[in-house]
Image (cartoon, rainbow, N blue to C red; front, side, top):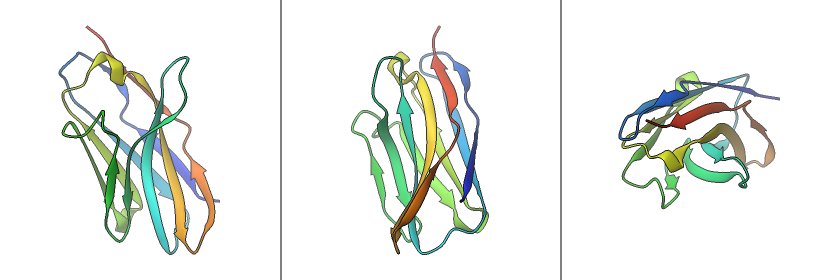
Length: 118
């Protein structure tokens, strides 16, 4: 199974920026999506953004215009550039790999903490 390792979390002031990275080890095959989810204390895990290796992105309404997802297929790495951060963006951010075609068992990263606070 592919392992996902996130990096780039931390503490930032409101209005600041952070860039998350997620590197996948192993062979990733077919049409697949890599993305980011987040989970705040007491809340369910929610989609932040995803990107398909052959093109196409999806964003949560709450992050549109502030976050940008990108990926380097040659490096099996996905990035999340987060700008204009708000306190409500505070959460543990998880990287996710999903296989679309052919279908297969996806993977979760271990999570990285993002805290937006003054």
